[in-house]
Length: 141
Image (cartoon, rainbow, N blue to C red; front, side, top):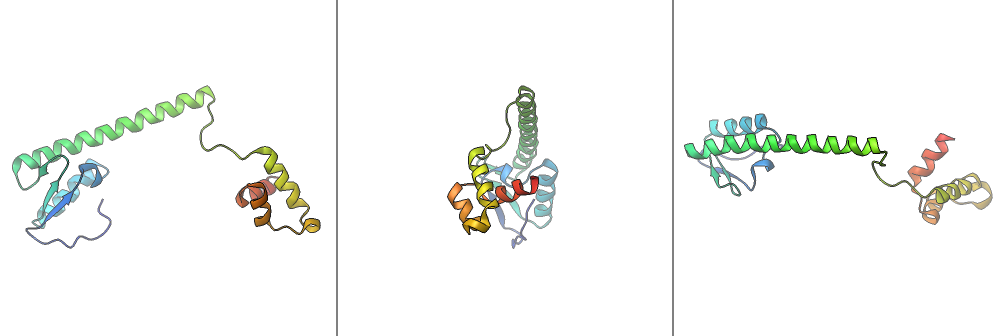
């Protein structure tokens, strides 16, 4: 969906590199195209060589928009299946966690702040454990 207002006038052409860069769904794509057409603005997609000022261009625009959405849905479906398979196998999803030894060191330094005079930033810099992790682990205790 177009986020910013377009300052185009009748007879102008909106040039886009690829069709999937213009909209995320066929519905949005057609809504944008209709809005542009009502204002007398032609849509030109460079990579697919589509120009909506011609009947053949309008046909190709519609067909490729539908194919692009279908392809996006297939990718989402495959990704979800792969994630579910990995989860079933017990594969860790997401970022690698912090080194547990360093976290324990950071927590012990935090607990001894009165004696060592270290700030949380200094503890974070010394141990490599982010401040947010230190605070989260303290909250857990």
